[in-house]
Length: 310
Image (cartoon, rainbow, N blue to C red; front, side):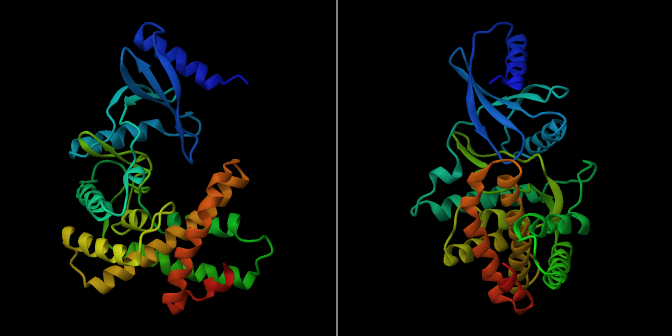
């Protein structure tokens, strides 16, 4: 089968290197339309990103990478780019993800490093960077994915109305917490461990939103379950490191409700990835995401309706 985008990418690399003395192999895909390839040349390696311009905004990727680097955070260095074609050549951060490195002995220390980096991210001055806001429309649009893709088509109108009330509560919670720079997908698969420490990838959807959003992504990861004790330990660590100025109980509730918003969205997204895009592997992660949502439905009476609906 002809891969026209790969052919174009190879031609672009040949032009940049001024020869064809390189080997290109698949590195990874993700939940978007982007693809990543490892390029080997003269004992050096690079990552080539293929982001079809009609589907992905590479200019934003470049802008956020530059902003992170300017704030002493390790994002992949951009070696060259062709935004019109949707091609970028990036520093190779290696193959070692945060997720692959975790074990029972290093878990808490590694997560503390990730939280330290998150605190730095949240101190980024986002003024004058033209980033979108996680406003009511975006928050509710994400949760609507639950209805559109995850729930059965014959879900009752009554249940849908109850969900809209839940969406209102969760959106208000997010909007009434501290607003900061949000990575938007800050979890164990999007953190790399390199010789120079922790590096951050998949940041192109950055937005301005709740300070609890990235923390939820990290501690209630769709791909990895931490124990309740570990979550509590790390939540307290973040609370101290970030100098949160509200009572811990209020902060914890903001965190848990933000997590519920994210997990309702993810249920819809993972189902859509399977049904629309043929990426069926994400169905394997649905049970954990559903478990997170039901835990909050059990804890807070105002969300008990979710137990029936889900």
